[in-house]
Length: 635
Ligand code: ARE
Ligand code: CA
Image (cartoon, helix red, strand yellow):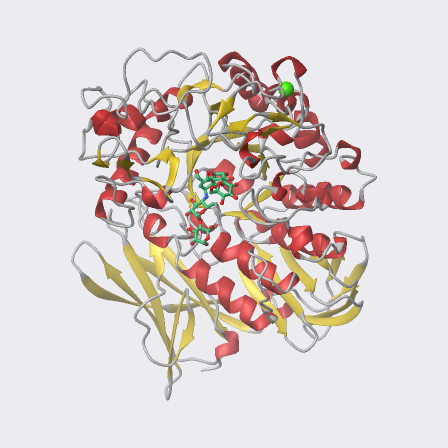
């Protein structure tokens, strides 16, 4: 069996029903070199009977170039989850093929998923996300700014900094008390930049509910927008304007759901206060008779309690058993925290779940049956308000246990399957800045392996970002070379998953680790006369024009470790695109084997970035690609 000819994925040309229902049969197409094999079989595991089943495939057609045979077989429709792999025989040898790759002996993991009834929101697959850290994006209302010494919290007096100055506090340990004045009115006023200029249509806001710190991960009140960011009415206005088509494409908005812990100033807890809020009842820290006592876990009351990472201002919520007061409060019914913001009059489009792996009972830190049960209940709550709303989990490793059976999250922040490998390839360091170089073949197998862990619908809604509010800035990690940002942007906008721009990354904003990764946005850069911003705009337009870049197949075309070139195909019924990325600093001449995605000899392809046209010959395209740049060849 010639391994180089074998291909299948769950793209539209190879899978008749990537989102099957219980009544949809799934017809699979498998590619081999022409005349190479004598038989092929689908072997699938059906969770309904716990057995493997075989489907003999039949020859169906040749591809457009005449280079390949296409074989087909059908998995019958039922409501149960199934996992499939292929067995390929040429009369003497056998090969096995599944999402994790090709092997000569039968694999025991890495099968493709069939999950009847499961689908992720199509707006997540087809959109581009823009992440805003509200205090640092734009000051739309100076009337709500936090001034110097407005209050003292956790021993830190608030500090008001002028836009564009450093993010570090005067008093060490008080970084979270530094305020620049950005707010929701500011995001609203700049929707034209996000939606029209850049073309992004999904806004993800870091926490906005009332809290004493600039990052607001220590929630005082889950039902109130922080006064420094505006009011609930400002949020309602912003949501309406995001949804509206009057300032760019009609869009979507997701909020940061910080449900592992509250702040210690929350009335439920009541250990610290910093403003004039009077709590109607005593919190768990103040009285064991508090109605909220069961919301937290005390080892010894009141001084010793479970927290997020030992941070006393972030007491951990105790989710108890199904139906507990805490679960009801956070997501149990209409009027719970999760549901309130999904419901009218607000109508957000989903939640990013902070520290999602840790939600648990009894002060435990998750990754067990209770955490998964909570996530399933939370999903049910979200979808009961809006089946089209999304859930994006925060997890830095392999998140597949929350994603592989369609009952918990719709996607996750893709540190593991995008940020980390891309950073190592382009910058030569990992997301924490430690030296780690990656060659294209290793990059490719990393990406393949992480995709293989996930159902296709989830692959397409993993959020792919170059950096976040928890990592150093991509531009800084890459040593300040703006060309590496160009390459990162091209990769991000052509890869599988929801591209996510952390505000400022579109112009190469600099910054080290937290808090330096949260500098105030430089509005003088936010114009298409900035080359990176113009490129971002161009790339988003290209992505929006070619569905193949969003929901098409992904096929590796070239991993050239010597010349540091990585090329892959994205294609569907209507378009074939070949993306060529140059990891070196020099212009290189590259020959890419495009016959692999059935581009025929003599046909023309256009580099969508430069407009240059090339002709396919000998099954390849030869082109020149600038250093730390790329080409997007489309047919
Ligand atoms: C602040 C200071 C820090 C200081 C810390 C402790 O800025 O310099 O070290 O206080 O005093 C929020 C704020 C932070 C703040 C923090 C604590 O944004 O600025 O830090 O609260 O007050 C792990 C968690 C993951 C978490 C990251 C940061 O698993 O959930 O650490 N990310 C979320 C948010 C954060 C937020 C919180 C959680 C808390 O996105 O912004 O912090 O609500 C490996 C591990 C991961 C680990 C990761 C990073 O990959 O596998 O589990 O993530 O490293 O450490
Ligand atoms: Ca303000």
